[in-house]
Length: 81
Image (tube, helix red, strand yellow):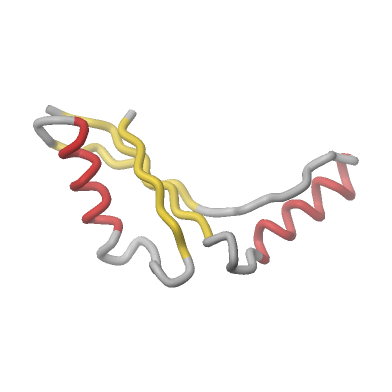
């Protein structure tokens, strides 16, 4: 079966996020937004051939851990859609 899996890579909470800070600054300056925090990351959408949603999640996490993120500075979330 084919499953669509999103891999979300974000900086860990204790790691500074310059891109998120820049986005927040823009939102506050240009839009008068009431945003308290912004964390910027990346989304990788995969189509995975697997027998179950849990297997699709395991495959996506395994692929992601081979170079899509640095576990020292990033956290990753995997979501089967």
